[in-house]
Amino acid sequence: MALGIAFLGSGFSARFHLRGLVGVRNVEVKGVYSRNLNSSKEFAGLSEQLGLGKPKVYDDISKMLSDKEINAVWLTVPNDAHLEYTKLISEEVSQGRSNVNGIAVEKPLARNVKEAKEMIRLVEKAGLLHGYLENQIFMPSVVRAKEAIWEMGARNSGRPYLARAAEEHSGPHNSWFWKPTISGGGALIDMTCHSLEATRFLLTDPSKDKSSLKPKHVYAVIETLKWNKEEYARHLKERHNVDFVKEPAEDYALTVITYEDDIGNLIMAETRTSWNFVGAGLRLSVEVLGPEYSVNINTLQSELSTFFSRNIKLPPSETFVEKQNADQGLMPIISDEAVTYGYQGEDRHMVESFLSRKMPLENWYDGLLIVQLMMHAYLSAENGRKISFDPQQVEDFIPKVARGLYSTI
Ligand SMILES: NC(=O)c1ccc[n+]([C@@H]2O[C@H](COP(=O)([O-])OP(=O)(O)OC[C@H]3O[C@@H](n4cnc5c(N)ncnc54)[C@H](O)[C@@H]3O)[C@@H](O)[C@H]2O)c1
Image (cartoon, rainbow, N blue to C red):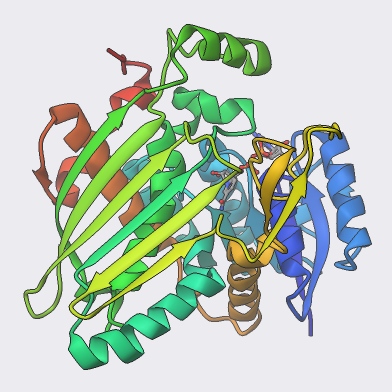
């Protein structure tokens, strides 16, 4: 039996999921709804072209959810709409008007703890399964790194004590990301969620529960290094109609988490994320250190590269790698980004979980912890000091940047 899924949102991430779903069995894309009908139609065409089914394009979300063949929803709308649509889907399911039994939501789960907790309350009340789409912990390189660390390094010399992860590129593709009052912040809310979960995943002993790694302290620095400068702010105004001088967000975030494991070992995670990295394109890097070993991942050190001389002029594209910055010279090519970045792995896990009616291993409680860590990071950056991890203190916290009160020096 195939899982019938519907997409809420048909943009950048939704299309990455289509490419990820190509390698997944027992799934059919049955419907799509977004704010932009043309984009939904294009998405439906791509789904058909990829052999994933011919989804019906809806302009009424309730109609889509009432399609008896739709069993799960991939929620790929901007951050400010995650709660609103969770409410809507939960309501339709609770009223018996939908056969949906699971929701997979894109990162970050929510913009703050209050929203995240409300989302969990709603899906639990409706009896829905919930998956948190954190692609990086499904990257084949990260999964293999975890095996090497724990099956060889940790078993023979001791557990890893430090993980570093960075996600860097030259800035988001769509306007809403640049509006912190809509997205919830800057590079930290957008990308630190990835690096926090990737490091937590690698540092957690696979034979133990995730709760065996307890956050103790959080320290963070956020800054705006590039995009508030006149020339770049002008570019944002022209391209995205945002005033990054008046309403800036951080384009750089450093976050350091101190964890303690179940036998009292001190463990550290460092994450560095930025929207001001100019290189071939998106760079995901991870490093893990243990007593007698280390592992390294760098997605721009690709096995495949190309060279185009100055004598040919290629139009700007992202054919070789996401957030590509140049079209000439020596360029890495990532053969299949949906696989390399972990979309295929996460989509497979969500489809298999929903089909067998099991809670995904990566679910909204993981998303909530990541939101709590990010809120601690914002709080630490605002206070300019390391703070203890205490979820109570971020229960109602909304970062200054998300309230339009952040200013750059
Ligand atoms: N895993 C990743 O690496 C990754 C990458 C990009 C985006 N994301 C996440 O995916 C989500 C979507 O981001 P994106 O890059 O696809 O954005 P996008 O702007 O490319 O696409 C958003 C889609 O949602 C639709 N939409 C917007 N507002 C809506 C509303 N109120 N109601 C219905 N439809 C609406 C748009 O029409 C569009 O189809 C975000 O939460 C983002 O953080 C994750």
